[in-house]
Every structure is written in C-alpha cells, then in structure tokens.
Length: 334
Image 1: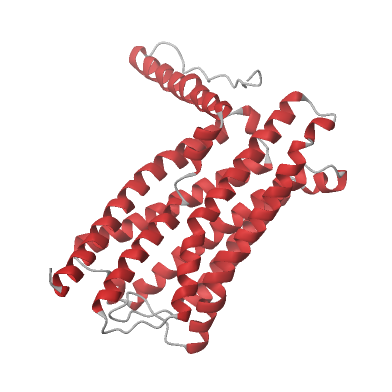
Image 2 (image 1 turned 45 degrees about the vertical axis):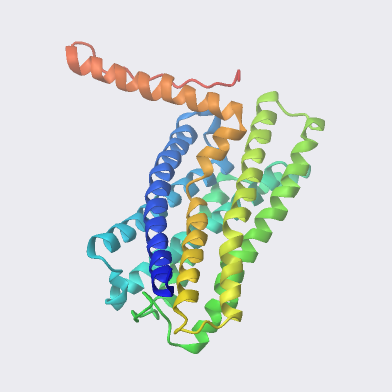
C-alpha cells in the first residue's frame, strides 16, 4: 500500500468515524438528557432540591451542546467542507457558542459536587449554605462568566485555511495553549469536582450517625452516588483531550508531514468523541448504577407521562369529560 493511499484511508476513517459517532452521541444524548429532565422535574421527591436543580441545568446544557455540534457536522456534510474555513463571522459564532456551553457545563458539575458536600456535611453552618437560592445565583454567575469570557476571546478567532478557526495573536495563542485548555477547561474543574465529590462521599458514609429521616438519608445517598459516578466519567472523558492539548503545545508538527497529520486527525477525532460523550452519558450511568433511579424512571414514564397522555387522548376522543389533572404522587416508599 502506497503512502498516499494510506493517508487517504486514514483521512476517510477519521471522517466516517466523526460523522458516525457524532450522530450516535447526539441521538443517545438527546434521549438520555430528556429522560433525566423528565424524572428530575416530575417527581415530588426531587422538587426544590439544589443538587437536582444543578443536574437538570446540566442536562439542558448537554442538549444544547450536542444539538449545536450535530448541526455543525450536518452543515459540514451538506456543503462538503467546514463553513468556518471561509467565514470569520461564522468562525467567531462557533467558538463563542461552543466555549460558552463547555465552560458552563464543566463548572455546573463543580457546583453540583460542592453543593452535595455542603448538604451532607456534619456542620450545620455548611448545610445552611446549601440553598436553592444560592444555586440559582451561582448558575447565573457561571453562565455570565462563560458567555463574557467566550465573547471576549472568541471574537479574536478568524477563518484561516487549512484550519477551520485560528488565532493570530501570539498572546492569545499562549493563553489558550497554557491556561484555557489545560487549566480552565481541564485541571481546575477536574481537581475541584474530584476532591469535593470524594469528601461528599465520606460525609454520606457516616450519614447514618445523624438523626435524619430515612427518606432524606436515602436521597442524600442516591444523589451523592450520582455525583461521584458523574465525576469519575468526567475525568475519564475529559482527561484525554486535556493531555492532547498539552501535547500539542510541546510538540511541533511539520505541516508537510502528511502521514503524521492524518494520524493526528484520527487521534483528535477519537479524543473529541470521548469529550462529546461527556455530554450524553449522564442518564445511562445513573440508570445502570441505581436500581432506585430505574424505578423512579419507570414510575414517571408509566404513571405520569403515559397516564397523562392516555387520559388526554381519551378526553379528546369522547369530548365529554374535562381533562383530569394528573395526581402528583411520590415514590417515597421506594
């Protein structure tokens, strides 16, 4: 096999892999995050809980991130090339939106772990910090910071062949290379979420010593388990792209080395697919790790959603009885 055919095959594999994984991650992520939102918002057990509020916001962010990525890939497939290579305006929009959603999601996870640590603490003063009002304020601050940061720095990106978006300012290149990707989007959120979730897990292991209702104790244990498993997968999916970004700052690739560039392209496609899975995996890890969550999901789908639409359909057919309001029941006995 000649060198040119090998390079062409690697490029084709990378393109097919990116298109396929992007579609699958979008479909499964859309379904999973939608089911998460349904369960978190329909169960009385989860209402007015700060941790559930953060998880719901994260699911909404995930849907937006996956949808935006899918649209970008769809447009690239439709037109045969990335439009950001030819339009600096579209390049700036792409960078601003993707960076805003990525930062917002990462630090929402950090806030989730911090809140769970506070809410399960032995110290009364720390537990008092964990409030829904504070959670809403932090979410607003996090979104504003993510958006302002992305607008300030993303506006300096321009379209530049052969790359889709590029920076020309050396100071900003160093900022992205040595701080934004490895620290702000990598080590900092990973370190915060990992350490705090570990301490929250320690709190829950000793929660039986506190005089709490059984229902509250089970809820704290369930949510802390969710947070800990979520952070484990966050580390697994984000660490490779962080390592790759650090690697690219230390290694200079010859632009004339086509084989090396093709290999790098395939590796980068795999790294980005893992990073994107971080936005689609929540429901599936919750579903696989918690029998209680499986019962809760079954209850919401069968007793609330299906029962509601069945009654609505029957009411529309006979037009006799008014549409009954579905009863709000909890599954506290589980």
